[in-house]
Amino acid sequence: MTTSPFDVNSLVPGQILATLDKGVISTAHIMRWSAAVENFHRIHYDHAFATGHDKLPGILINGSWKQHVLVQLVKVSLGSEGWLWRLRFRYKKMDLAGDALRAVSQVVGARTMGDLVFITLAVQLVNHLGEISTAGHAIGVLPAHPGVRVPYPFVPQDVHREIDFPQDD
Amino acid sequence: MAATSADFERYVGLRGPLKRAHGPLERDALRRFVQAIMDKDPLHHDLDMALAGPYGELVAPPLYPVHAFRNPAHGPDPLMSVQEDPDADGTFGNDGVYFGLEPIASPFKRLLNGGNDIEFFRCLAVGEWCTAQARYANVLLKEGKNGQILLVDIETEFRVDGADLLLINRQTLIWR
Image (tube, rainbow over all chains, first blue to last red; front, side):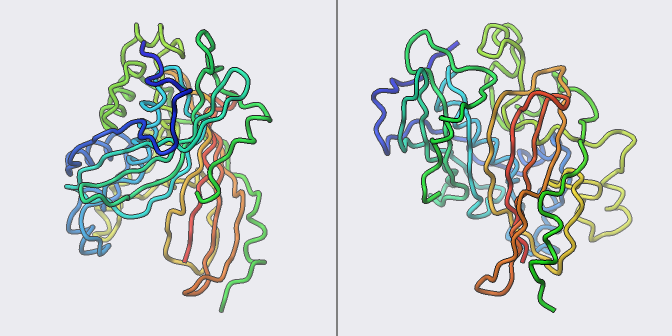
């Protein structure tokens, strides 16, 4: 089992905490996802339907897939001792088959409450052109001291709800 | 005729039925799922690592429950619609994020996803059944730059068989 990949006391706002490269997402990747979750919407595999019927520029990468990439990004960012408590995001533009996608997390801030540290991250999905297609924030929970564990299941105390997403989110 | 706020008041707070996944989380379904999201975390596939890990069991990724409700064998075949109608989009029988909520009657045709706000409590483990119940947390008619828009907030609670909370997904839909 790995531990948190950083010292929570040394976090600096703006610091990139993790990146997750998914590479080029092909129609085969999209098909695999659509089959796994049994989403048979034709905009995700039928080029003629997507471009002709729905007037889209190509086969669409599923938003439902992209949200799991953000979750994975935060998991990787926090390490195995952390817990992803909250995630808020919006889709800003479409991603199409053939786009290469990378997820990036950046430190916004951290606050210690008792034995726990709450870390706020900015999270983004960026394509190979540098365009941000999905963006938002996450709040993760980490132990504040060695030997402490984040309670699991994580049921936040009322005082924890003082910690919220940035106002501009 | 323009819509009025009164047209939508009755939906606020309206709950859908308690939906139960057609089966418990199976290890092979989890394998397919994590392969599809390209997540090699051993907590999702390696029993020994999972037992020694922070959750003490094989678990799905935190957001998995929103996809736990697939078609039962006796349910509607979404692809039958494609055979019958060449313009069908393939989503027949799938109510998406509504989880059985009564559809909102409105004159709006275009739908945009306005974003998600999700709170996680624990992961669904292999062998556990997932349930979901959605409600309209807010339905708000607004005047936009190009006419009226309807903002619909759906809050869905996912639990382990109606008990322990897994996550709460608050999703905003924008109808134009």
